[in-house]
Length: 212
Image (tube, rainbow, N blue to C red; front, side, top):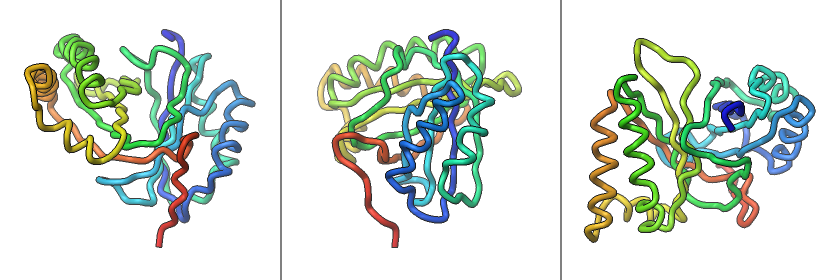
């Protein structure tokens, strides 16, 4: 895992991403040594025609991602990409496969506070997952360190939007402690933002709704 890198691509589409595109993306990545981790489209907080693609590169060469994706993506109006390194999670190559409410949250943390930030995450996650029927998919650190600040991406899954709201209001002492750790984590950051998505590559329930 230490030598595995991930890449994230944000694309604004001219049309809905066809379901068949996921297999084409996977094939294109596989030819260059990569793998598709998942494709998500925005639900709340970002335009509905925006998609997030996370790729996995066991050999550490994310530079091949652009080449692999260029020939297989549906038409996009614009796109941006970034290189990421896994931290506490993911701990294996298994990609998310269940539909749900996926939250993409970015953090900007001063480098001296990064160890405490990681400790708070690791301490809060087991209680968070147990209390809210939720999963922490991954926490990645972006490769570029700017001005002594570390940028990271946290990806979490809740079963639905109702649980997203429920997780904000603690109802017992265990949930209060989880919220305390999460709140302290926010205190360490100079910036954070979040948006929610659905998983286009889900195996149990497809998101094939069309835009109007």
